[in-house]
Length: 241
Image 1: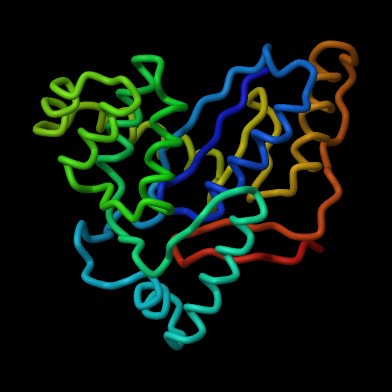
Image 2 (image 1 turned 90 degrees about the horizontal axis):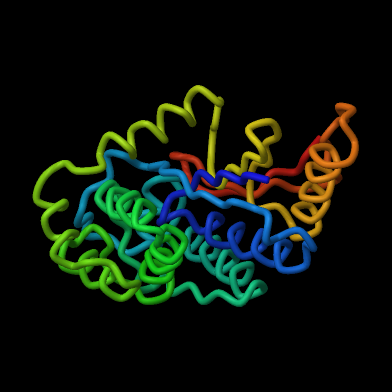
């Protein structure tokens, strides 16, 4: 089974959704037969490298709300992250442009380190409060997961792997992706948002049964009450109809 995940490194629900999927995969008896690939998606392609705002100020300006409301929303996100074992430091988080980070991640995937690089970039942003647009930071992070720092230094000086990032983003547009995280199973079924672990468990089993035991098409409509995802307008939780 193939699973493709569109996400961005500054998307809080992407990290949460990643953990929930991983938890489902840990309990899935066929997890060794799954190929997982991370796809590039920029929530804010026009984001500045150094916006000069903390995350509460950034969210308040983006959503047109007060600083106190933005801080409360971020604290709520932090509580959801803690439920899956993640630590978010919104007070020191450095919102930034993620294009170069995506380029490094595509290079890492080519070298067989895509999963490790994705995890390291997410942790660097949400937990370690590192500026993941900074080239020195990206080179350091790449080295930490076993990539050649000289190669990363060279690719960042030019536009290497930009075409791969743009190809992922174009594919997302063709699929009608409106926000991330966005999960595609076997190029047939999509799950939008950081769904609960049990939803991923149900989807994994249904797709596996269809592909390997039941050649009859069946509706994929996991029961859920909320969808949590991020768009270029911000992150939110939406009650499903």
